[in-house]
Length: 437
Ligand code: DLL
Image: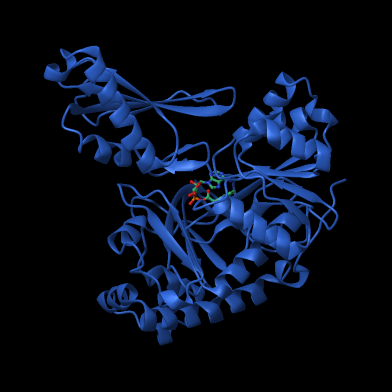
């Protein structure tokens, strides 16, 4: 029988009516706050004749404007911040849809909030004092590494800030320290298991008992495989930089949906085409309002992630927090390569700046030994194609380094003959995703 652990039991199990009252009170405060502090919302509220002090029920949320990733891009880097930079203690960034990154900022109170929701998430996974958390999410601008780290500190468990890469060293650390919890992307956990075998080690001989996996889509089939390989309980964690990072929602050991910490992140599901709110249980785009964030509060932020939402009580734990399904897909063409978000348009904007390559390209994504590989195939212009090999090699290197420095991940580049990429009558098929997840 799985064990259920809580970090803030009273709040996590708050009766529904009390949770709603708390959300309403926080929404009213938030609306007044952004109207006062963020010119973008000031204008948006005025355009839709919204007066924050007239919000009388959570249903009024539907009259608020939606916020998209484009709003962050248009106000790059700090234009949507509600606080001056001297009150922002940390910045992170993730991919934007073009060359510019999406920048997010945290006040000291936001970091405390992040630590709290992450501590709740780890506890929700059954992590307790005495556990050793091997954290192999990347530390850096990506929110995965530090988010888990803050949560582990808040919960008072031992964290090993391994970050990503150097798999042999990861294995040695986990074996020597007898780590009990593994946090990383689900695909990386399978890669590490395979590497263990290559080194003659049996993954089942490690001490891992729980895995907290997320940042990319994964299937039930993959879950079973990971659980079998490592002999652990594999649980799903969800989050996105714009909302806070990891720790927005977390599965409990019952493995039936992810509890969303709705006292801080108010969820809705909308029809991505019309923007209209959908009934509970219907599949649509997850939209989140940050009820308590200070530096970058967001109203009805469109995550682009497709889910279903339920307020039905969890049949396993005592939490009353609503649950989202596993992420069922994306509404846009965002790819996640080794946990990092990649938009085809980012690559396109790089290619367009290099005159020797034609604007015809294709992205081929494969998964080899549980690691994602992205190959950028790009046509060269006829003049360049007839050049000597050395020149072509130089061009390939240039394209490669430009793309890698924009995306922040390694890729391969293949220059192909003019007119060899299939032309489309309608929408060009830019991405060929051959991964089986
Ligand atoms: O991926 C935050 C995170 C780090 C979550 C570590 C979990 C663990 P971003 O880089 O901003 O933030 O990417 C956010 O990743 O909109 C989803 O499309 C996808 N994603 C995140 N978690 C999951 C998951 C982090 N559990 C984007 N399942 C989101 C499927 C996920 N997709």
